[in-house]
Amino acid sequence: MNRDQFREAFDRHKDAVYRFAWRMTGSPEAAEDVAQEVFLALLRRPAAFDPALGELRWFLFGAARNQVRKRWRDANRWAELDDDAFVAPPVADMETTEAVATSIRALPPLQREALVLYEYEDMSLEEIARTVDAEIGTVKSRLFRARENLRRALSPLREVRKHAER
Image (cartoon, rainbow, N blue to C red):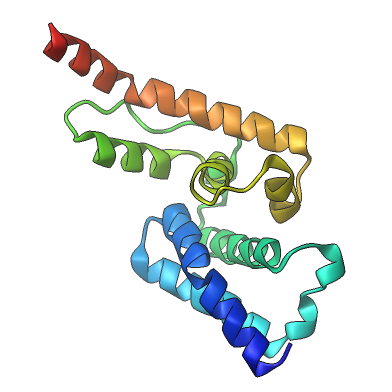
């Protein structure tokens, strides 16, 4: 990968990598660090990307995922990677957008990852499976659990709206 190809890759994918890292970490500073590390790694070792294995976008999201997971491990948060756990209490007195964002950040990381890649980064189930090195069925399961957990967490908002409409 030459300098022009790197610049094109950076310009094309930097925002998506940052958004993914921000949604996974909940921190703009951490997202900037993750995105920087992803592109520095590509710049230092361009041969790490093999186009025969998939698109550059998948490679970059996989690298961002690895950086986020490394941060969780370093912060002793690895236990939060449990795929079945849900720790967010239902929301009640928040604006809808804030409540949704808070509930997404509270999802277990593997569920949040599947939801963010599917809903916000518009990846197909197959693309997500390749990115996170999982079976499509596993991705479907994580996505289903994420949606169910969001539905439960956001159910008080539905009740508030029902009462307001009366």
